[in-house]
Image (cartoon, rainbow, N blue to C red; front, top):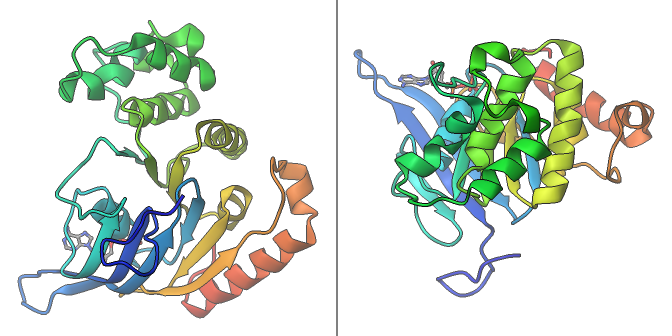
Length: 267
Ligand code: ADP
């Protein structure tokens, strides 16, 4: 669902970036130009994957959308309003789950509710999240008792605890073994289809980007610009076996690999 633009005219996407740029200051004064003229519109409920060479500004873009960093030029609107910092409407998942070791899984997942001052928070929602991600039996366990994949699932539950509209994921499965990563891809697809969240996923895996995305955004080497915005026209639910044999998958994978190779990086 698109938002009416406050300026009138074109309806506003849920995430709308226009000419977004970011320069990190450096001691020499030259600065690191991380992002340049990013134009991006993500609709409510879309799943958008982002790939690009290391250091091209992917994490910077995600942190700016999360309200954890600021941009220097251009506009960024979430749901028709500007960003003043981290918001309950945005959940973030990083490569490391960073669960607090002295809290149980359930307590870790509930933490954003406690920190956000949600007194008398709805525990059944937390139980649903744990159940939905296969952690129903593990709520009273401690992080060290969980595998890497399970810890990352708990991290996803924690990001969803405040029921955000937007889920931002920065290489969430990058530290997992290949088989666990495939399972997590399937679970994330299921979770996304059931929850109707808007997801922005940063990944180094072309497979993962295509398997999960409605669109794949390809970024250039630094300063990061968007060099392609490719629609993934493959029906859902997608299965890992079926997608590999799908002609659209091969075409997209070839195109993305070609674009990344031209930037000096192979997946
Ligand atoms: P990616 O996620 O695509 O690997 P990043 O967004 O992490 O890229 O970084 C983009 C560029 O900005 C890199 O050159 C990185 O070194 C630089 N950078 C990132 N964060 C900072 C920071 N806090 N201060 C200075 N430079 C930074």
